[in-house]
Image (tube, helix red, strand yellow):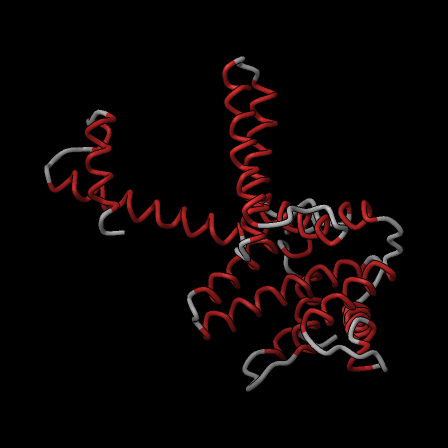
Length: 266
């Protein structure tokens, strides 16, 4: 292995340099060599979300930087496994290349795919076959439970729909929200905390199903609403401060008046 000083001042670095730098850090850096998959797990998640933020903001330079940070996480985890003698970064590349070739038979084989829908259908069929899924339940159970809840629910609903278990229309999906709201109200009237939690979950799941039928990503829709809430909150607070008052000193009724004014601008 090269001395780490040999890496200073290069005009350009490539993936081989990144792999070697990570190997050096795992040997020489007190922090890096102490890390485990679990200890840097949250870092991976944060870097992925930062990539999404760069995409949403259409910031090309930031996207390049954040993609590099995600690649760093991949290399970091692969290096840990390499040290344990399990697999290497090359094995990761080999597996994903094989997967892409196998799941694109219309490109690398003789299968015909006339449109995107056929491509996606082929992908799912091949995926289920290679993963050994024999039942539709196994397909649902294969959805990563670590996904954000809305995204998890939407993928579950989509796979159930693929098995034929779905609403016939977006109207039916929408009407189910009212049904679940009624059951939530009944649970609140008892009151039964466990029942309330269950019924509230059903309401949210029904909303996700409606979003899917409308062709809307539930995770994105909720995030946008949360961001809109922050803007309205900020506007309301600004209006209140202009009157030399503080939000916490106002009654609920007074706050609502300022909130309604804030909604007019956002």
